[in-house]
Length: 441
Ligand SMILES: [Mg+2]
Image (cartoon, rainbow, N blue to C red; front, top):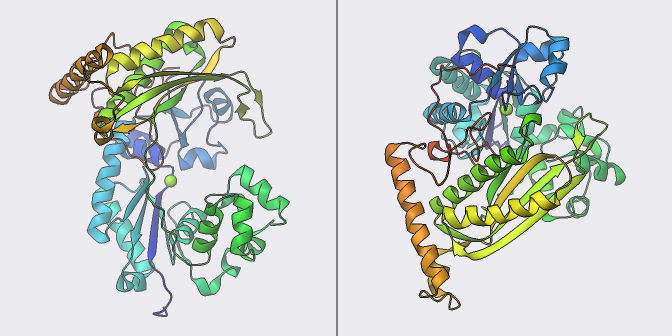
């Protein structure tokens, strides 16, 4: 390889990660069509499917009932996110033995910054990583690796050669070497972005490549377009870490979980998870939002578009305590009981208006002796104490009010891009690696 290729990034992306993780931990699942579902409910769809299922024509997101029509003996297991997070941590350790991981991009994707000597190894470097992973885990747990001048190009390379693939993308070979790639297969090109690109006359990789940076910015309607252009053309566009502006999650409700009682259980657990993360980040919140979505017609892709939504917000003095958060949530749920005229398909609870401790002490409008403020300080002390007890005696040691089981568990610790939860995010006791959670429906 020519020494001046500017190759400096390696992107590693695991294939069907949740499904292969289940096959890794349970040898009986190897070689079988496996679907991983978020909840033990017949109404959910697969969040990952094994390559054997893919080969039989099953699409990811397929619902259990539809999938069984195509593959009657398909095995469904419920996702165990804490198990996947532990596996992720072990994977990062193994990759680090070959080349240091610079950034974790998701539970199954990492990027490494390569030294010139590493970059010159090319495929041999990828093979060394794969060999280290195979030795540490099992052959099921495969990944695809891209090596390129920028992270975007390396990611494109990894994604274009799945499963167990490798691609080395050289700037000198562009755009010809990627001419076959469909626009919507590119990271960062969503359905909506593809439509905007088409409206601007960009219909394939060649015409995307030919854009000027300013045109890209106009099509993206943000500086993100220019960032994409730069990365595509071999120039690094590092992303600045974004300031956290809210904590919380939304959650799909299975059909048998759309009653007011069960929605309340879900919303309370979402709120408690958000408050716990708020305390870990050493922040206080001033606003809680509660939202429901529902209704919906099926779009062209078969996925349902929620067309009914209801949103509520409640305000409070800056706090990080469970009591205030739950009391505010209760007001929102009361309002919802009166106003929401549709069965919700999803519920979201978020904490906003985040304030750091330093800001608190400087805020003149807060009178430390005001009765509400004294009350909040007491409840904060209670919440801090409960966090300490949970750390010492396990996540189920103590909570305000009852702890009702939610199907699938893991509320508040769903794995999101860019943030890998740790064990303390999971409201349940750890699940053993080998404890496969088979669907009962
Ligand atoms: Mg992946």
